[in-house]
Amino acid sequence: MLADFRKLIRLSAIYGLGTLSTKLAGFVLIPLYTRSFSVAQFGILGLLEVSAVVVISFFGFSLYSGFFRWYWDKSAENKKESLFFTVTAFQIGVVILAYFATLPFLKDFSQLILDSPDYTYLLRLMLISSLIQIVLLMPNTLLRLQEKPWLFTLANLLQLVFSLSVTVYFIVYRHAGIEGIYYGQIAGSIAFALVLVRFTLRNMVFRFETALLREILVYCYPLFFSGVALVILNVTDRYSIKVLGNMADVGLYSYGFKLANTLNVFLITSVNFAIQPMIYRMMNDPGNKRFYARLLTYYAYGTMIFALAMMVFGMEITKLFARRVEYFDAWYIFPFIIYSIVFGMMKDVATTGLSISKKTKVIATTVIITAVLNLILNIVLIRLLGNQGAALSKMISMLVFFALTLYYAQKVYPIPYELKRIAIMLITAAGLYGISVLFNMWSLIPRLAAKSILICSYPFVLYLFRFYHPVELTALRSGWEKWRNPNEFQENVRRLIKK
Image 1 (cartoon, rainbow, N blue to C red):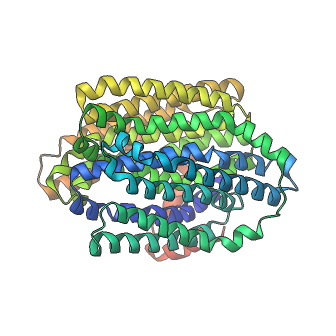
Image 2 (cartoon, helix red, strand yellow):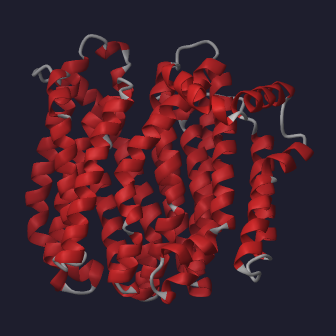
Image 3 (cartoon, rainbow, N blue to C red):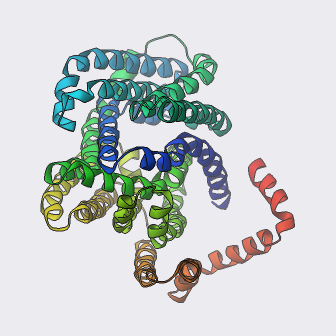
């Protein structure tokens, strides 16, 4: 089991580099956005971003999930290349139809979403960028299934270079506004596709597997509805703020969400890329349930260290990236958004039993229930608490989502998760964050020092609550002995990569 976790850490680190290169453009450009765009314009960008998520979810039909599930299935054992061609060709056909079917309604969507028909061209750029991303999901998924993280990283690095360069050029030198962001995204996606052309064609056999496609579509049908409902769950906050508030409120919330969501973008997404192939590959192993149980514990442990750091330094992070004072108050939503991301990560791991058992209808049901709950909470709490109400709604909804998923998954595929240890982690981190708020009135240097000490104390506070098993304490001591010498760092990294 330790070998599996070491491999998971290695792959997560490599995928993290690739994911970092994919998302770094949007992160690095935040200061440029806050300098170039007003809070209201940032609100327009925020609504466009969540609309893109809706497009990808709706027209993607969760086909990559079906391909993921069937790639290791015995029925496709000698048909992997033709299956890849079949799903990719079908996805391209859906994307082409989607573009021409949506085009006549863009003016109406512009009025509905952004309160003006003047953003039709902007919506068209968003649509093109989103549909290209849907097509690229298939080779991206195959890279993960075949565990080719270095090619994944190379493609994403080129995507970063093109996306960043084109975006800066159009915003800074051509003063293109938000359009420049989508020019950069489209350019980056094209670069990504060109790098993977050879890999994609080499892994294709041009034979259409109608029977397998039919099975995948049946499997994906409930996932499609659950995916759309999940997207609604994730974007309801910004649409609700726009209806119950104004575009400036959306902009402030979107800025805080974008910063807090770096936990998901740079850490959780990277680990998930490594976890998912491993989960399916191990589904027939005799000791898989013990592995899945420890996976949730260790995943939550590593995530909470970064989550606590982001919450504690939320005020400083918000001010660091903002170029206008009106963005500063966005840090108030940080703890709610970050905890909702953590609950979402735990939900993804808890879904393992439902996915292995092919209980996708149950997944759809839990998502729909949670989406309805989130909508109700938004209507109530945004009126009472504004942006914080939207963030609190998301956190409560994701907690319920995790609880429902865990309940139904345990009924069909029981896994001995260590829920008590996870609760200790979550409560301890919340307590330390509450203490850190008391330091916000201090001057900069003492504040940073006190908050840093607080974050570093987290593993030791957990020790006081008897969180660690003896074997884990032994492993931690061994790891400390191995990594504490700076002169051995390069050699240790080299060994980790080669394993």
